[in-house]
Image: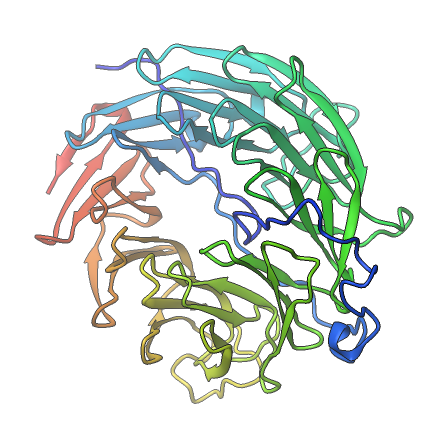
Length: 515
């Protein structure tokens, strides 16, 4: 049986801060005595020192399948089709879809799916029960989409970091977004500022905040008709420091912007559009929020400082910690349990990371076998995964078994004991079980599923029938799925309880199960 269906792909947001600073409405203005911005305390004694390194990098995955409570959806970009696999029965349906499906998001209740078809300049809104859909035209040359927390709104825009097809008309704008109400099908095109970088929403979906190089576009979604307010976030509009991250307070009152090369953390009152600044003295290279919502943590790589702001009043005097001088540290990831932060750099070429214990503020540098590409922490906060670059940096000798090879290090964060693994290819994707016990990893061109056991730091290797594309975890919390390259589609399901593997091949030929 076949019927009309849609592609579902996950919405992966660029930027590491995924929830927001909060602050009191009565916070003092920056520079009015909250603390001395001219002291060595405020700037670490180095002013806005530049260390000569490029910005830290973060990865974003495109065209990745997504699992809901009932289905796994796989977009087949090369064939403009999409496949739905029913869970747990593994019934497969495949159908045509719009040209070049670029991204899709599902509403929190799973009732609505919204597909952005970049080739057709439209979003398709599907009812997941009846599979009926409505096509809504959007502005041309967009390549990315982000959905509001309540699933009612999507914003399409042109992300310079996303796959960028050539313009198919005589003109192109890099300032526009398309706002779509998926419940009514209404579309509002807007000009927000050059080079939109990301879209954030207030948790209640009352506002959408579009951050561009020098402006915030604040869209009031609670009005009878959405209205746009453009707010300049840079004093110098001729050569502004480029905005890199935006995060929104849980109460929807404030937005916080980190700028490349800027010496301030920009604070915007979303109601009035007023702009204030929290001086940090040196360029921030990353900002994250503690899982308990108490602190905002910012890294100043050039001055080796860690700035810690209290959520209740970020204008109050922050704590400033010295980072180890034998490591260049520009990025931070907080463990989900809030016990620690892990600091590292993706551009230094050094084989180092550091651990920050929040209860004692102790920061300790640790050696690694290779430079760092990115760092992940298990859902329970007990294990870290350090993905390494193929490049050796300045510290890997030619005699090392990891020389000019990809690698991954599993680290027990209770004792900082590690198990580095040599990898035969570049990591394509990682998924982790909800209980934090297992990790699943696939590599480019390598027909294997690597099963990582976090309790023992051991791994198992499961043979696949073809090269993998993406990996994820099913709604049961432990079973993994692996989409693979095949002319007519292939996906495998791995059950760690009995180490069984089931494979579906040939989605467009009424796929069957291969054990």
